[in-house]
Image 1 (cartoon, rainbow, N blue to C red):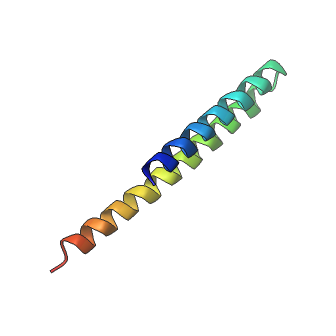
Image 2: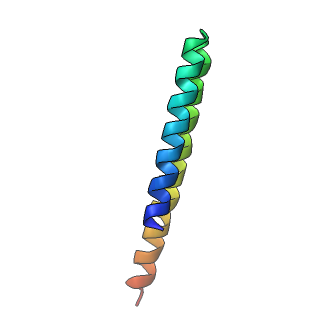
Length: 64
């Protein structure tokens, strides 16, 4: 699962960068910023889910 999440984050970053550059070249800088923020939010949600799973694992591990 560790490698898969890194590849997913890298893919989202790459797609966001490509879309952002295309939109900037066409003069739609505001939409480019929104697309970049959307990519960032997707990655943050993925990381928060992983942190939640980590806390659940710790809770189950140290449960008495």
